[in-house]
Image 1 (tube, rainbow, N blue to C red):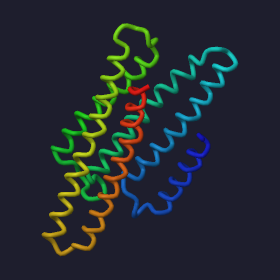
Image 2: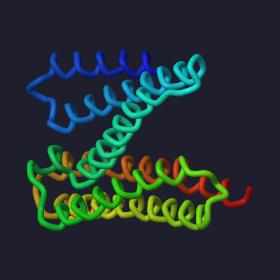
Image 3: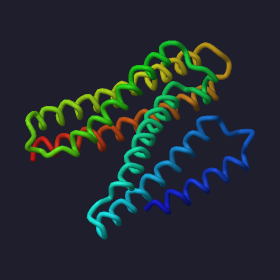
Image 4: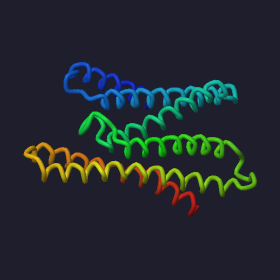
Length: 202
């Protein structure tokens, strides 16, 4: 699987290099995210292989956790930046978008780090289930918070399409943001809410 992500990353970078004049900064960040995801999968495979043969994947685990941390940070950054319209609708972030970034990203980093620590401790530890459930709930809150910039961008594009003469182009962007919103909602539902619901019901 990691090799497929590496191939996808190479194809994406090649495409960006061929279309430099039309590629936005966010496209380069997305390419870096795919590359980091490929590295996460490769190091996870090395980790499991090491555990299989030596019983410990300590060295590989450290690299794997660091890359997983970077991947999580980059994923939320990319989703937030796309949601705010950075590099696509506008070349800057306004103060409201910056506040969302400054709250959600550190909170997501803390939650992801704490989830790793909690999952590495034995389930019988005092308060383990409470911490696990609390951290998963905070993760869902972070995921829902990234919907606000997307909704604000959709509203901004709708207002802009009514106000200026570039209605066709603005409506195309509006349609893209609506599709992105649906994809993010599906992502949150299937990667956060469904697994949490299943784990709580089992």
